Length: 422
Ligand SMILES: CC(C)(COP(=O)(O)OP(=O)(O)OC[C@H]1O[C@@H](n2cnc3c(N)ncnc32)[C@H](O)[C@@H]1OP(=O)(O)O)[C@@H](O)C(=O)NCCC(=O)NCCS
Image 1 (cartoon, protein in one colour):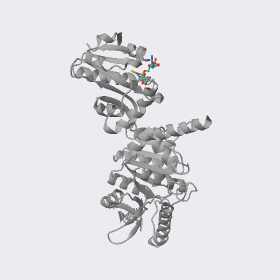
Image 2 (cartoon, protein in one colour; image 1 turned 120 degrees about the vertical axis):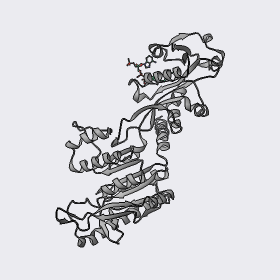
Image 3 (cartoon, protein in one colour; image 1 turned 90 degrees about the horizontal axis):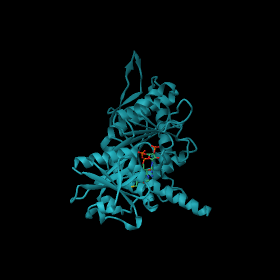
Image 4 (cartoon, helix red, strand yellow; image 1 turned 90 degrees about the vertical axis):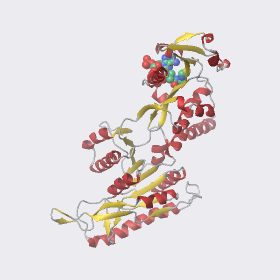
């Protein structure tokens, strides 16, 4: 029995990842590995997770920070050692991506990692009379070169070194490389992996999600290292990257949990509010099916095939949170009468009692009025009282026009409730 439960849990977990897999497939993600990540004992798990993400269709650009960049000048004599140690770290990462370890996600995977002269630099120059030597700033990113590598299913690996057209090498701030490369290639996400879990509230609990404004207000209480990451994440969002995530490189499976589970593991920062009520789009289909399927199995919602939902997709309105569908409802009109059905009304159990159900119904009622529909109705087995509180009244099925009566699934024995839109 215990084994059965475990199998069911695993199956449920696997099924629940489907909406995230669909959402993230084809997206471009910058993964910023902060100082200490590549030498930490968990790094092999990070590599495995990156390999899995790549095989799930993410386009990955990895930027590794070999050592934090001081704000002081970098003498040209120091460059030889810096270049050698940076290239050594880069080679180590490439080596780990090349290991086809048995019993690991890398087994049988052929991962191609491309590093190169994708970042052009210019010297910082002289500031307040001090020559900053080989310290440089990102001048240009070879977007075409990176895109070409990603289009060819390679992982792009960038170090904090920049090449000048005059053939010199400059030491760059890795955070600056993450920022500029993310902006230049129009990344969908920036994930910064550091030695802390995310942004913590005053009581020590972790913020799972913050808007840019709220994240900036946390800067005052953050440590210096956290402050840099928060600033980078907020700048990235300001520059048009829709999401930035702060997670720890020490947690096994951190990347997978952050991307493929409901609440993630670190702190996600986004420009605005995360929950949105909007007409369904093609990429919401999997999320709608995921949401209503268990309710159909329980007999709470009427059976609708995937094909039927796909055909009716333009009639659905959804509430999404970070691209995940957390509530939905459909307004199914017919061409022959002025009554329309409200169907597939569902809110994910984690988000109930927050008013989303009511807001969805009111949005559909508004849409119906704009289409000159005079009445809407629902078929329900267990939610009659909820609809009554929203202005619906129970009626006999004979009050529905023939075209709507033919839709009935008689084995459900559902009640009909109608709301006049007067
Ligand atoms: C019904 C449902 C869509 C409501 O979603 P929601 O986002 O929680 O809705 P709201 O937040 O606007 O409303 C919540 C209120 O309705 C109440 N409510 C929920 N289900 C109810 C029911 N079956 N009967 C009576 N009241 C109900 C809640 O207790 C809550 O009351 P409160 O505000 O006094 O605390 C959601 O519970 C759900 O998905 N249920 C399963 C699917 C279903 O029954 N769909 C309708 C079939 S046609």
